[in-house]
Length: 238
Length: 171
Length: 198
Image (cartoon, rainbow over all chains, first blue to last red):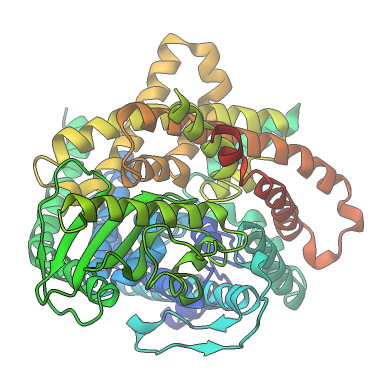
């Protein structure tokens, strides 16, 4: 704690949940955020799966940070992350096959979730194992909470239910509002974009725009940030 | 030379170690996954043929859309797992057909239909219309707003009847 | 021929990767500000998607499945895509410098584009043959191009009106709302395959 540049592990953990929430503030991992949140429980499932991968890959990459040569670090990270994703796939298929069906292709696609590669590049390869694990837990919880919030809004408005299909979590039947005509569009693709936009706007409003301004677009957390910035700069020059 | 070699060696070692660990866990989890799949499949078969407990799988040649054809051991009927293409892609249905050639039950299995629209072809309001109907499916209504998914379901039932006739008991 | 057309139209319009399947959202939000960068990125994506499918499909079908290693799909595919992107970059730089100049900066972004890994996995999930997979890959890429190009137009309008956007909605939120409206318009295509070909 004596060094002000090194935040305590607790700070690292809570940062991911609120101040640097990966989904709503850094705007990372947008694809699964939009795709699987038709049901609250799918959001939780995706969140937990990604969190497990994130914590494990953060720990391993932090352990290997002195062994991995700089030149091949990204391929090495990808191999580590892909291995943990495959591991999680086995576990989900064996113990929660319904969740596997609900998440579909987005389960293997955790590999290219930029939160995970981003944290490997931005945090785990320059911090201690413990700090990296805390970062993984915090970011993971932040991601899960954001997905859960989106899933809840979309499921309640679009299907008139909440937490249905949560048998694998030990919750039977969930809550039904008994609506005859729920607003189906919230379950469809446009509803995903709309709810996501509204949630970010809400965070913007609550933080008076500070959160977003600090990290414009959240690209800083993305491993391809430099290339992306070059593209945008190139476009702006003309 | 060493500069060039090290990255390659490290990457290779990581790949080999990762694959080996995955291979080990696969050996451990594969039986569990197979069991989970079998349980799901058995549960679906029991659900579409009331009164059944165990099934014997029947060999069926030349029908690539029929994934499983099985006969209830206690003689209540047959269960067919049929695949087709829905709106979003894969669309699998379990169809139960009794000895009298009437449907005993249907159940939507794997599918990637749009939640709230195509996915409604898996709801009781739709599947509940089928029991007691014969091959013509007279009086079964498609789900409003999910014509493509409903048609896929009807095609699945049709395929199941072809399989039913092929196993010989339908004649 | 007809089945290929159905797959193509389905991939471009009905199951559009960006606006209906939510794959490739990062570049969709990140690189759609300018029409020419949106176009360049999309062309690079189409190219890599087709190439990745051409390589992963035979490897999965003729090596991984016979050896009982299909569980290594995720790890093998992402490595192939990463290697392909590197290889394409080097090859372009050496042999077609003009093309490299135009597309080079987009290539590193593509490894982590989930649309590319997504199309290689989905092709196998759907049980497509090699030919169908290639058509689906090109179609999905074209769908990505269509969404990117259309959206860059929408976006320049939205950005031009930034002054009248409520403060909390400025930036990403209003962009997402605009994407929602684009996505509504693509829903209009949902019956088109049935209507055109059956």
